[in-house]
Length: 113
Length: 117
Image 1 (spheres, chains in turn brown, cyan):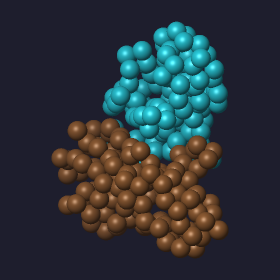
Image 2: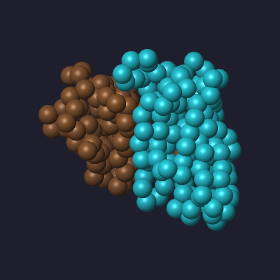
Image 3: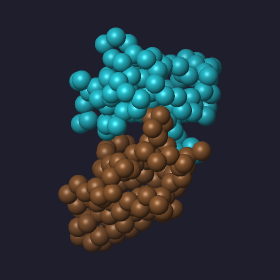
């Protein structure tokens, strides 16, 4: 069965610094999709970034980038120049070819002014 | 604002009751997903519909059912409610494809908070 593990329940970073959130997953599939979602206090789920497993190039979206290591089944999120608005719960998610989606337990990110 | 709407925002009911949660996807989106987020279970995928047809099923209880209507809005029906069903229920939508698996991004609604007393 597929699983997604976020080993850091909580993290803190100084404003303007860089932080990396970890995510590992387990699957026997070769074609799948990975996502990072952000859930601020409003509880809305906001897509941050996505990665197709067949693409070797790491996805980037402005200050957000991923380090996708397919062989190691690792998918970490790097946030550069952290801002106060980045404070939120971050979820890593795996999407199988059959469209089943599995989320990690989340990492709560605090931004220190 | 993701473009996905969910009603009601809050729902308080008693054990044994039945409730219906409603979701309207973004304009043009054909796929609708339902999720349950509780404190102990985290975010759990329940079910997906594509253009009125069930496409994928996750950890959905038999007491729960869903459907997607011709106008593409979806409803999640929860019956014989138990205290443990108290949670935030999210709906998400995506463009979807008619192929084996959709590859596009899901956009989440604001959620319905269900409290079972």
